[in-house]
Length: 112
Length: 118
Image 1 (cartoon, rainbow over the protein chains, first blue to last red):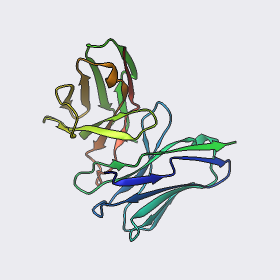
Image 2: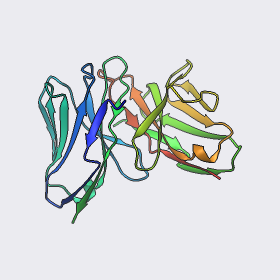
Image 3: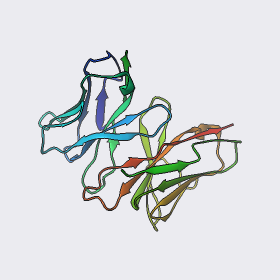
Image 4: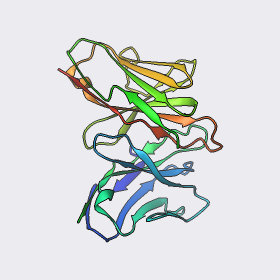
């Protein structure tokens, strides 16, 4: 049972474009939603995270949009750069266990 | 920021041998460490959760006698793959939570260890 569904599986954008990755969850007890960036052969690194008490969080070119009623959240990468080419994982966790449930990942390629 | 290291970064071994992977939190004390396994182009699969000084909690389907986890201190956890076989070949990643942080949801991941069993 996949509790966090992530789409698309792969994404190709041109340099300067906007990359959008979507995630949907089922467990309403989730209260922490991080996004991780992983380069080939490396471990994931926390990119940005949001809690359900806000609808949007922005850090530089990265923005999380959160829709609690729809149980969806998305990552927007503005002005995408070739260096952003990586695999992105959304995740969700509940207070107490703090163990994230990961989405299946999105492979992003940004063409120069 | 919090840094987690893993050693070795890659290892090749013969079938039937045991391999130990170390995970260290370099600049913080990790109250909890996690071990993940990742197959190519797939997501992370949690194998076990370990707390310093106590037995690890393994996820369903993970053989605890095959994947031995020791969390000997607040900065070190080890994963030993016993009697490794080719199907154990994978990318193993550890992560740690910083016990000082008010919100402890953040996990800091190590760089991973690539294991190839011949």
